[in-house]
Amino acid sequence: MSVRDEVSKIDGTRTEKLAELSAIIRNSGDFEDGIRITIENNCVARKIFKLFKEVYDINAGITVRRRYGFNNNLIYMLYVNNKCDEILKDLSIIDSLGNYLDCPREFLISDGEDMRAYLRGLFMASGSVNDPKTSRYHLEFVVDNGNYANFINDCLNSYNLNSKVIKREKNYMVYVKEAEKISDFLRLIKSYNGVMYFEDIRIYRDHKNMTNRLNNCEQANIDKIFITASKQISDIEKIKENDLMDVIDDKLKEVIDYRLKYPESSLSELALIMSNELGYHITKSGLNHRFRKIRDIVQRLGENGYV
Image 1: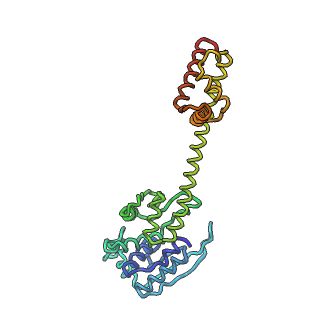
Image 2: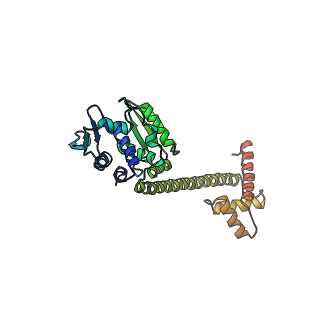
Image 3: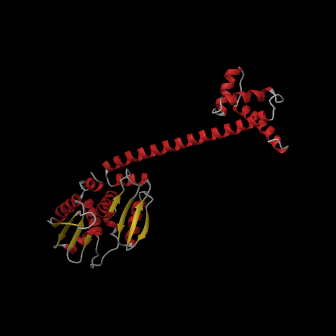
């Protein structure tokens, strides 16, 4: 079930229904000849029909057509020809003189539940949320007016959703990008199945990303160990090539023997192996000190032209 399908089945008080219907008509309606609403979702079309009946005792007319083009979806057109001015004023879409309002009056959304109902209607009419399974986290609303876009942005940010507004050709887009905030919005409009689905995918993706990061870190550590060990073995070979094994001290001979015996071990692993086999404690820093001495010997050989 889509988020639209789910929230279209939510019932509410009369004021919540007014707020919901106001947002739907404001974003999907045309008012030049009565009230005409065009919507692509069957469940939302049924919701609009039900709201007109319950709030205004009006049976909206409805026609179904097929949209020809890219997706061939059905479109639902609902129309109301009586009480239109009364309805539009009641829903704060026009003022008492019949002028179109950029934003609804405060009375329509003054209550918290009414605000949530308005955002629910807005989502049904002009919102969309990406499926987190197939794409990036993205929630958006496309509206036709800059003042209205800022109004919606303020409503969303009153719930700390970190939404933003951008101009897009002739319209404006209000959007949210953060996964946690999108989940908060779905909870806000009471799409609880949507929240559960979204959170399941988000947790899975976060876990997968964490696993990838850990694997990358582990691989980086393996690469670092290999590079370090290779440099140490290269230094040891240069010491042997220059017949210096007889003149270096016993501690350096020990570390050389064990490095050649365990060429793929990290310093920590090598320190543990030597401690167990030699019967006295050797630390990683102690081994590192011995390898630095070997490095110094090789560098002096290079300065004297031997390597």
